[in-house]
Length: 250
Length: 305
Ligand SMILES: Nc1ncnc2c1ncn2[C@@H]1O[C@H](COP(=O)(O)OP(=O)(O)OP(=O)(O)O)[C@@H](O)[C@H]1O
Ligand SMILES: [Mg+2]
Image (tube, rainbow over all chains, first blue to last red; front, side):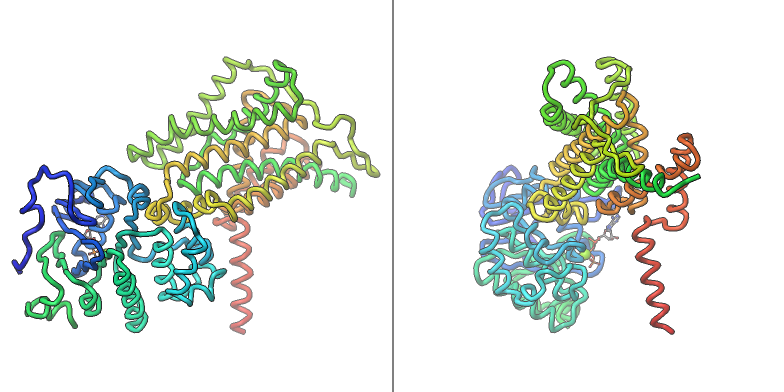
């Protein structure tokens, strides 16, 4: 399990105030009261890179994502495009282009598809152009623009959550278990779309529990267990780790 | 005995004052939706609207429309001050909603005291916006002010509808009310939205206060009854729904007016509170959600048959 688990923190002096990566977290940790749910964790996403975080139920994946986007208090530092953004609030991070699709999608349930997308573009101009891009990617949303979002199917809801995030012009898109609760076919469709977005240059941090497909798309994988990164390895090497392959690939 | 004219008269008067309750109720909903806070200082905005307008009118001798146009932003600014000085610091320190709500109650009392010290404790009133009247139709006497209330109230409701449905900020406010975290993750400055909610809701209270003062009076302490009736209107409407609060306010106003002509003015409060209790006992989620549920239940049982 030690393969590549050395984090960047080990090679960069602790005092470093910049980062060469698109997005980098150094020793980020978080608590629920006295429960240390996320031990100091370091990870990064390079430009145009799709990185997957895998971990079983309760490993701390959601905690990690919430700590990164500062939906909860956290310690440690965060860098984006070389700049220290540790002190920024959630909405300020979003303005920079750090956008997360929450676990459970976080739709505005009583608003229509169009209104959800429009709030996605809250900080950005050129709403109409971006709407077209989203509709090309997810034609099913276009057919349902005036439908109340809570009445969409699970797959459509996830498409809306991703479409809405795209309206916010992400530079790094974080997704917390986007395939949760979806039929395998729909999950595949959605993950393939993420792959396509990544090929167009979008940096993606994808959290999944078990996802062979997420591993095919990813270049690198972090394995999270018990609130810490237990391993970091190239995605194509996961098959050569017998224990990991057994858990994550089937 | 109650005749048709009296009933009609109560309907008209009740609708006028009920619209005022509805506006105050919407003010409650706007802040509640943006934050979960029930702002018990809502009534003082109504009071300040009337008091500021009266003061501007008498000290500067300007026309009432102008005085109102200056008073409304002033009261909105007072709303922002309450948010900035009291709510935000508590919010940022992670105070419970309960503590913040208590603080708004304290704010209400404090603003009332400041008003006594600065503007005095004497009741005062405004002239009706249009002199003359009342308009007599058969036995009915309708004060011109009622038309101002109904007209401005309807205009305001229309503007609110456009604001919440069509503007970027209005939609963002609704988004915050449905999922604050998701809104923040999309770049919506949730803190600033709360400030906008306070400004908007204070302005609504001010308009209500300015419109209603010519039909009665204003003084440092009128905030409490208007706050309470607006709160009841919002609860009848299923706290949080602006349309529900408006309808709840109108129902409450009419019910009160009918109680006054049948039982006497002393029953104004009794009527309002018994309406609240009945609605809460029968439909804990508000009258309209309750009725909807009943209808749905009936059609379900009809299907089953
Ligand atoms: N609000 C909370 N209060 C206390 N403990 C919490 C809270 N939320 C999560 N935890 C705990 O923190 C740990 C990590 O939870 P987290 O939700 O981050 O896991 P996860 O990896 O996202 O799991 P899943 O795959 O089920 O979504 C768990 O042990 C959980 O019980
Ligand atoms: Mg999770």
